View: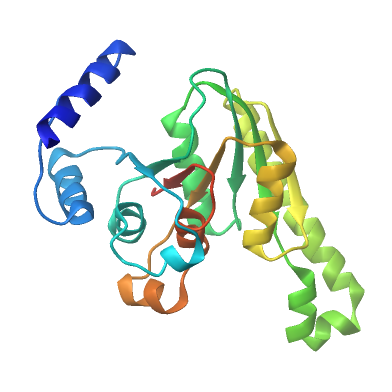
Amino acid sequence: MGKEALDRAKDHACGHGIKAETTLLTGDAARALVQYADDSHADLVCVHSERKGRPGSLFLGSVSRGLAIASSHSVPISKGWIAPSGKLKVVFATDHSDYADKALAKFIEMAPQGIKSIKVVTALHLNDIGGHFDIVQMDSSIERWLVETGVRKNEDAVEKLRNAGYSSSGEVYNLPVNEAISEAMKSTHADLLVMGAQGHGFMYRLALGSTSLHQVVVEPYPILIIRP
């Protein structure tokens, strides 16, 4: 059965002009894929995931979840029905950390084709900041500075994407990060979410979760996790 599935996948890839070879791996799927990618010096580990929702995200058997946790390679994860043609609308989510900036540079270096537009999205969630830091409540100029800084950094990212030949725009949301990403995906009718994912080890992710892990296991849209 596995060999037949591989043969069908190879024929499908070749039919679209993609040179393909097949290898049948055994053992835990995520670990086997990570090891094979390491050994073959792969650039990407591509998988398809069925949306399981919040209850399903508690189970650790998901291959896409395992790759999001363990892979040192960038991971495109397709979900649901994939349009057979047409250019993609992309949301690039960033907190403008050093790691996120490296992820943007890596994305530009990868030079993906078939993209119609890229929207750079940042979430500040000033309501939460105000609830934790009295100084923000005392001086609204700090809030303005945070917004202006977010907008400026978004504009810098947009300029980099435009210089790379992409149509791009940016937006700063006053929402929790996962809500901001969801809103951006809906409002732009985006086909793909792109974001960097910096790991802190399995136990950290299991205990606290992460934005990227939430996006992988809960949300319905395809995602490309960039690992610089």
